Length: 65
Image (cartoon, rainbow, N blue to C red; front, side, top):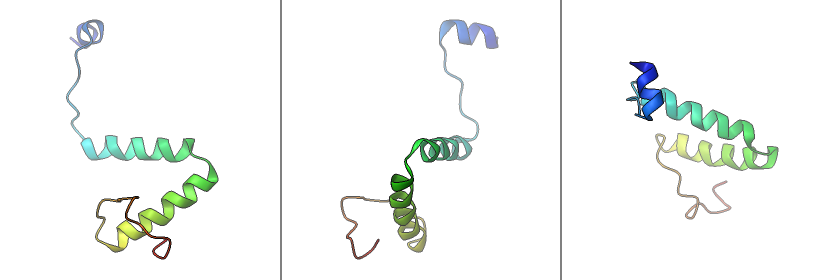
């Protein structure tokens, strides 16, 4: 069945969305420049202080970073 799904391009249901999303974030982090990682880290710290809310990079002021 797995070979059939690969051959026909059918998508598999993601059984662990959080793990998959974390993997995407880690891979993006690893591809980033050190400067980009520093900027992202600053934004993640702000989100962590706010109960892990979303990061709206357009609304973050230089005072918050």
